[in-house]
Image (cartoon, rainbow, N blue to C red; front, top):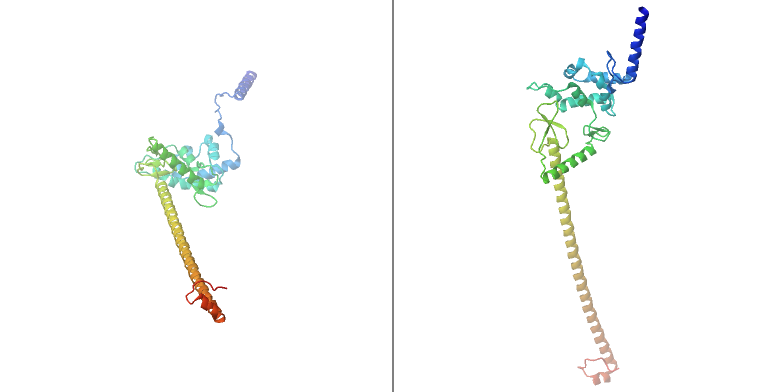
Length: 294
């Protein structure tokens, strides 16, 4: 009987191994998914450090007060190229700025939805393709991300084109897990309170107003520059006309002076000839106006 029991146990074990090798479920054994792959010691330490940094109110809502094993690998991969310290800073910032803290402690008591989903939203990389962009700011310079600004401009242009084509662009998306919060249609950042008709947050509205003011200032500068150029051209034309008039007057005065000098020289020569040759002066007569006859 003991031998039969051992043989029977061996047979069941072999069947179980064969079923596992074939990818089938084995009774009493949980099927493993991609998220259940074992993490390295360093990866597990990273998960624990980030989870420990999350707000205590959120951690209490997680299953058994921690991140489920099946979600850990996806959670790690969603963080992108950031250090553990940077991820901790990201989660703390988003917890407040993205309205999760407000939603959890809202007067309505609605709280947040999936705690695991919120934990994922707190740590995952943003949608900007620039690797050094951190929620709209360049990590290296601290300045506004240029690609994010270009993307907002493209979305605003697409929104205007849709409105011009008669398509409805007024729908505002509510922020998930955050009652009373909505998502800007331009930058996709969450904002609190009543959504404006155009669905744009205050930051995007200010950015659009600043862009319009900058464009207006540019047009004003260009108009002033054009007016200055036109005035400079008019001044140059007037100066050239004045110089031409002055040259003409000088040339006329020079001609007059030369004519007078020539007349005086002719008179002097006549007087000398008349003194030297009185007989010729008598022939030509005192009133002769032509040149002397010699």
